[in-house]
Amino acid sequence: MKQQQRRTEKGLRLFVAVGLPEETRAYLRQAIQELRSIDLDAIRWVKPEGIHLTLKFLGDTPVKRLDAIGEAMFQGSRSFAPFGLRIRGAGAFPNLSSPRVVWLGLSGEVTELARLQGRLEDALEAAGFPREQRGFSPHLTLGRVNGRLSAVQVQTLTAGLRHVDGMAFPDIPVTGISLMESNLDGTGARYVERKKVGLG
Image 1 (cartoon, rainbow, N blue to C red):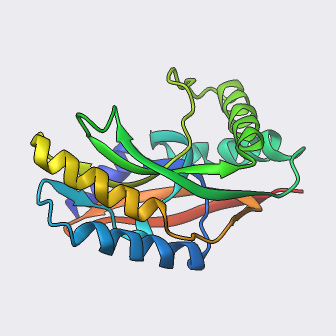
Image 2: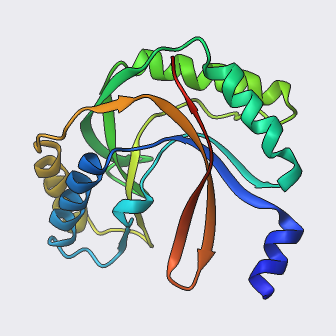
């Protein structure tokens, strides 16, 4: 009941993302299992079903804004045809020497992805949502580091990421964008698709 009251008071925790196919999630599950096997307790690995290619984080948003967000998603994406991405590259933010977030990178039609994100940002700003000040850096988050890794642990993580980067991931078709709601409970985050807008 308290959680429901908090959701009502704060609104919905929302973000706009590109959905990932199940085939891609299966490979991400395998990649995370590989990284878990290197036994770095300081890293909290993401559940594969919780990995998204985030385009815009909206945060706590009143339910009454859902229609405006849906319209902005349509306006921002209507001139785009479907395109493709590939998973390539692995690293950490801010860097591998002092990792906080472990990620996989993207290649393929990333210029088109950046254009789509920029148009979406413009449309959402016109609808009254603050513009993101940081530059867009497309990635898939695999894990988050608690505390600081030792030099030996950093070397171990680097070797693990090099191995994962060599996996033959399937291509990712980008055919639409989704408005996702994130709900936190005792088992972690659960995600609900609130709206979807197709490309083309």
